Length: 468
Ligand SMILES: *Cc1c(COP(=O)(O)O)cnc(C)c1O
Image 1: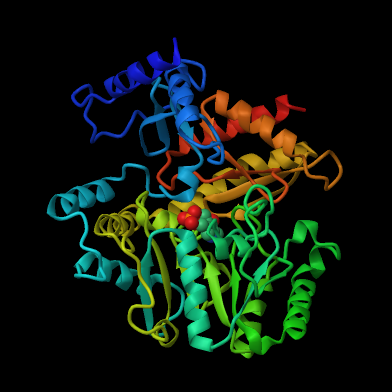
Image 2: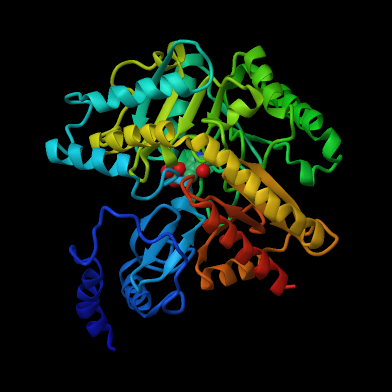
């Protein structure tokens, strides 16, 4: 097939696969792993060729499979393969990729109006999402919420708000942090390749402290929380605490490797920030909205951040982000200083209300906790058996294993890639993360069936064993 043939024939080939009437689109795809071709299959390969000619290299892809439909714990590709979804579009479709409450609310909204721009005229969905976040985020103080479209935008706006409220300039972030791909968020992100290399110079006044990563703490696990806090205190002394507007922290690090901070670290960071009048910003873009078995990961250690950033799962797959926080901080920015043309789009707000409804009607926090139990039951014995697994860690439906060379702490990203590739070819979609690329992360939709989850974990275990 020539390139021209590819371009002219594949759209119709693919649209044939989604012809309405061939099945009821309101039904979930069959909740079963089904492989009818190799993965990626022939139709995905044709699409991939077109993609390569139309899109820049800088857009990476974990698994070059084109999707026809998705829902529950299954992604159906254009070749008809049913893959088990342990990625949820990087924790965006936590309530499922076609959750009824999300789909029906968005359909209802799109028929009424698509957009007004909230800075021009208002609509109730925006206010209702803000009310929900004000109620659900940690702490009983008076709160306000401003909506945005992406996680990076939420993080940047949290810094703007902290600067406006404190009259200070500097920001403290952590090793292994990921805060997004815009210039300031990139400056706040730790990992050089692929996120930062070649994209500088970056905004200044961003300082980095160690995160309480107990597996790799030089002084040992037992001293991690205390020594990491001492290093943060030393940084504040060096910079001058009265110059620091915000400490921005992921209460459970995402891209950096699903790192659960050593117990006690988060509360002591919060206390330190409070003592110095520094705004504590929890970046809950990945960990928030129920992913960890609490609505917010900060709650596991009863931390009450001053500002909370959410995105990813908030919009149930539609682009929506938020900064929620203390009313007096949020109100420090004069009218017109916050917002954006698409920020808080009505369709995304309708979707978010569907997400909150799903948590309520399907008890999704309990489902997230149950996922942790199932994952630990399967992977902890495996970690005892295989000395390439340094640690099984995470909370709720945000679990990971860190892979190392046997008997050492030396990261093994090649093994992680090989295991992921084998899982992909077996119809299990999972992702990697970690500063060293050696962490396999599991982000199943909270609505995944337990049988599917167990099957996927069995395939992961088998892949690990067969690579050794
Ligand atoms: C994904 C992520 C971001 C960036 O979100 P985008 O929507 O990609 O801009 C920021 N912080 C954390 C913790 C994330 O996981």
